[in-house]
Amino acid sequence: MSSNQNIDRYKQKKEIIEELDFYESIILKKMDINDFNSALIKIDSALTFLKEYQTEFDLEKETKKFTQLQQKLRVEFDNHRNLYIRRYNNLRKETLTEANLENFIKLLAMLKNEVDNNLNQYNLHDLRDAINTYFTYIKKLYTIISSYKVLNYNDASGKILSYIKELKMVNFPNLKVLVTMIYQNLLFFQFQLMSEKYDKLSLREISEMLSIAPERVEDLINLLIDNPKSPIKKYIQYNREVIFNK
Image (cartoon, rainbow, N blue to C red; front, side, top):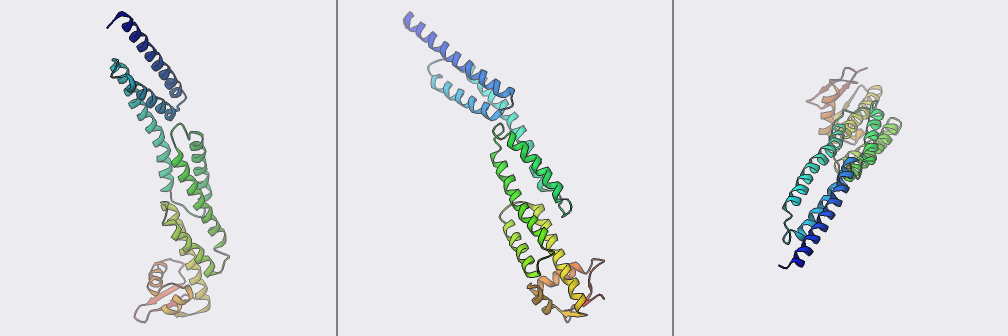
């Protein structure tokens, strides 16, 4: 190889190193502001750039440096991202009631605000979408809560059962538990109304009133009868008859 060729190769490698230094400076700046996602993208670009010349030049040292930086940054990125995911998952496990739902919404809104502010840094787009879906279902539940006590039974139960069906498509366990409690409250109120009108009713009659299969009504009776305030005095199983408290 001639001296001119050596000089050209030296200049070319020098330019490559300068380009890599430029990549590194951008990556470090991104890391300083915790923009880990952009930093990882830049590292990918740097490693792609290195691959173009690694067979022609000895760039093992530089490749190792960027690979190690990528590994370190990936750990930092995952740790920060997982903090938000963990908070979201913990919220989905929170026990909800009609009374604490408003406070829960505030906590979810706080998380959403933080996710929005760090959307690109930690690539939280999927989490943002999940939270938005969560809010959509909470809004629907709020509509049920605000109306189920004033609607007639058929309309209220129809809304609740439709909502329960929708919940099967998503993974919000605490919403499912809460709407189930609301449905039980609605049914409890219906049994109270029955107790005011009747001394006793057959399982079939109650089934027709509630538009629920007799087997399901029997399960509800067994559930409600243990309540100290239950309007049901006793359930006579052999003739499937409910005796009400007066």
